Amino acid sequence: MKKLFCTITICLFWLGAFSQKVYDFNTTCKAAYNEIVRLKIEDGEKLIRKAREENPNNLIPDVLEGYIDFFVLFFNEDPKEYAARKGNFDTRLAAFDSGPKNDPFYRYSKALTMMQRSTVRIKFGERYSAGWDFKKAYSLIKENQTRYPSFQPNNLLYGPAEVVIGTVPEGYKWITSLFGLKGSISGGMQRMRNFINSTDPYAKLFTNEAIFYYCYLMFYIENKPEEVFKLIQAKKLDLVNNHLFAYLAANLSINSKQTDNALRVVQGRNQSAGYFQTPMWDFEIGYVKLHQLKLDTAIHYFQRFIDSFKGKFYVKDVLQKIGWAYYLKGNKTEAEKYRLLTIKNGNTESDADKKAYRDAKKATWPNETLLKARILNDGGYQKEALSILKGKTIDSFPKPEDALEYAYRMGRIYDDMGKDDDGIEYYKLAIKLGKNRQEYYAARAALQIGWIYEKRGQKSLAIASFQQCLDMGDHEYKDSLDQRAMSGIKRCNGE
Image (cartoon, rainbow, N blue to C red; front, top):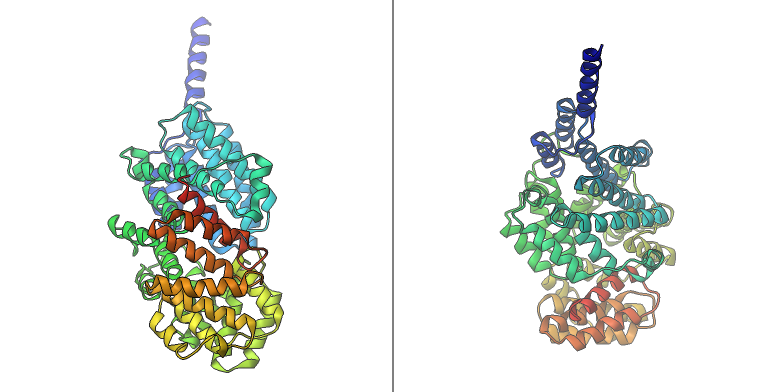
C-alpha cells in the first residue's frame, strides 16, 4: 500500500508540474509573431495553432492572438468584429492570471493587452474605459520595470507610454490629471533608441514593432521627418513583404508631402493572397491621387474606402475630399450631396473629422484657387502651388477667411521650399489676420515659425512661438496642434 501511495503521489506531482502554465516564446511562437507583425494574419494563426499543439499550457499564443485582434480592430474598425472579439481581452487577462506570477512576461502580457484594448476602445468611442486601461497598463509596466529591470521588452511599452503621457493635449488632460500620470519625451525616446539598438535576444525579436512605434513618435513628437526616412533606409525596412512597414512608409510619406514616394510604396507592396485586407490602402491612394489633382481617380479610391470601411474615423474627412473633387470638377450637385453626407456620417473624434464637419455645416465652398493651391502644397508640389497663386495678393481675396488662408498658404509654400524668411513673413501676417478666428491657420503658422526657429537653434524664439500656438483659443485641429507645440517646448527645454 505504501508503494502504491508513493507511486500515485509521484504521478500526481509530475502531472501537476506538466500542466502548469508557462510563458515560452519558443521557435514556433517567434515565427508566428514575425508573420503577424508583417500582417500575414492567416499564416500567423496557423503557427499559433501549431504552438498550442506543441504545448497547450503555453500562454504566449494568447499574447500573439492579442496582436491579431488589435490589428483587425484598429485598422478596420468593424463594429461586428468588435462585438465578436472584445471579450477576448478579458479572457486573455484571466488566462495570464493563471500563469506564473514570477515570470516577467506575466505583467508584461497584461500591460500589452490593456494597451491594445485601450487603443481599440478609443476607436469605438469608449474614451473613459480606454483611460482606465492605459492607467492600469502603465502601472503594470512600471512595476515590471522595477522587478525585472533587465527585461528588455519593458521598454517597448514603457518608452512610448512615457512619450504619450508627456504630450497629452488639453482635450485629453483629464486622463493624466485623473490618474496622476507624468511622462517624459526625452526619457521615453531614449528608452526606444536603447531598445532598437540593443543586442538582447528579445529586443532583436521585437525590433520591427519597436521601429514602427519609434518612427511615428520621431515624426510627430520629435518633428524629425527627414530622420524617419533616413532610418527606414538605414534599417533597410522591407516595404514590399512587410505590410506594417509599407503602411508606415506610405502614411508618413503622405503626411510629409512625399506623394510620389507614397504611391511607389503602396503599389510596390506584395499583393499576394494571405496578407491582411484593409480599406486603408484605398484611403492612402485616394489621398495620393487627390494631391496630384487626378480627381476622377481620387473619387474612385475614396469611394471604395467609404463602401468597404465599417468604422467612423476619417469618414467625414474622406467624404469632404470627395466633395472637393466634385467641386473642382464643376459638378456642384454631387459636391453638395457629399457635403450633406459629411454632416451625417462618421464621427468627430479626430481633428480632421472635426474640421470636415465644421466646414460642411457652414454650407459654403472654399475659394477654388486657394483649394487647388492647398491640395498641391499638401502633396509636395510647391512650384505648381505657387504658380496657382502667381499674381495674387491679400487684396485679391475680399473675404477675411480667404485672405487669411492666402497668407498662411504662401507661408507654407515658401517654408516647404526652404525659403524660411519669406515663410516667416507670411506666417506672421496669417497670425495677425487669424489669431482670434476659429480657422487653424494662425495656430499652425505659429507652430511652423517655432519649428523654423528650433531648426536654427534659436530656442527662446521657438518656445515663444510654440507658446503662442498654445495660447490661441478654440480652433480647428487644436488638440493635435497643441500636442505638437507642447512637444516643441519640451524639446527646447531638454525635457
